[in-house]
Length: 378
Length: 262
Image (cartoon, rainbow over all chains, first blue to last red; front, side, top):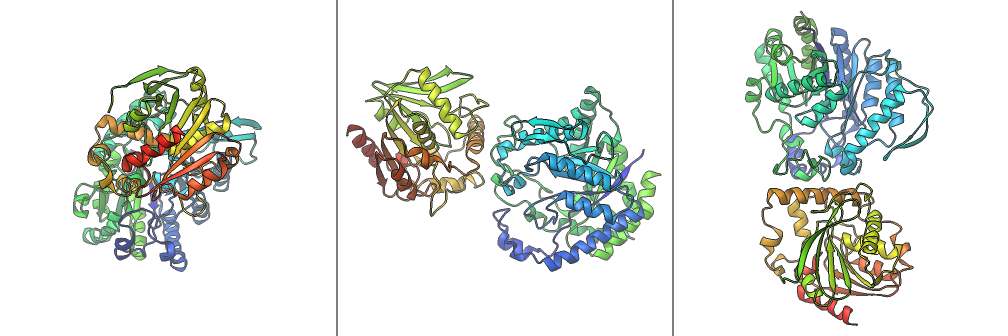
């Protein structure tokens, strides 16, 4: 079965350590003072991360995924499109999967449509365009009314698609967005528009939304068991709606690293737990602000939203194949579960985290390209 | 709690509206705060001895249907102007608490003809000049509860009324109420930058009641309302935060009584 393998890094600011977090991020997502950000150090980290991307391109990854988060020490990417633009000139062959643009928080979906079209034209059609609602904290960061998030997501999506697919000029008078003249000169190279991805963790609504529109669904933070269920639901819903089904329409994001020996990989993989327990710490209200989840989808008895690894240990996660580490043979064997049994035609390798030594990550990427990816595809 | 009242569901105009109604006399319209309609309380009972009290749940709140066009505080005010025409109410005493006070002020500014007088209890709607309106939407429930009261031991039956475990149905309602408050008040945060200017033309006899230690809406706002409402008086209640009727019930009822008698 054909499989497409993507490289992904959050581009963390890896100098944030447990000491700092235990002082400042015990109660709230928003309280680690940004005076602890050192731009010189960040510059050095970007150099490493882009060297890793260049290597991923050269050794044969099919794509690189990028994303956007705000107020986060664990992801230094406040703009997915700026990240994608930098990736275009860093790489020659890989697809660039933007997963994604946080379209409800933009005030101007037409500009977003232009930017993504520009990226597609500049890259020679290498863009995959993901659309996301953003985490609740992204709404709070932008001071966007969380109760408007879903409506704005839908309307921004409809406007972007129309901008790409309809002849201009046209007028748009929606509820949240108003444009007297939509007629951007820049249109995507891929016709009618770049492939669209939609990510989710477990919400049924997300799976159905993607499937009904024929967009590929990427499972970006669920267990294998949950992924089996969303995969089934996705394909049933897509088939019912008359859209194509198949492995290329489903993807799975997994933390994974390769080293020359299983032992070395196991030690390297410990970095996946970097500050994990602090990453989503804060009151429920930061992750579930009023109106962000629809009344229908809200599980009202859920006292705490539990993103992340839910308190499991590294050893448990490795045992359960939620984190995959090993020499090339081990990793190939373990990943078959995801692309052969689950049927994910896209594997997004979350391959770098926290203070993983740059040299080890470079070696891991080399092994992915030289041994793992050819074996997965063979 | 008296028996001089009933709960109704009326159909108006695009959806069902939950209404607590009781008493005899000229109409008094109570508009509740961002948290939701608390039902028939002691002050409703007291007021119902001299008034016909109407205490509706705002659209989208509690058992009232959500109405798509009612998407801002001025829209709520337009909605209630429609309701009072529909119910043919005149010479109304308008009574708003917190967010309901903001709705009341917008209604008075739109058209004061149907109203006889107005009581505003710690209303939002005007941006404080020195302090800030407390963060409610992204703060933990416990934090907000602590801000609502100066001294919880003053609150009769606090644990049972304000701090008990909610049933699933009540949680669902509370969730919906929070969603409505956010959709109307998220930005600007609980105020209308034009409201002060609109209120200058309101000549209604008005009472502004405020807790001296209001941790949610700073007491300085009492003066900001008083400055623009030309026919208003202010009553500040000491040892009291944002819920005077629960925290200082005697002083609260005295303030209402003396204003309404005058």
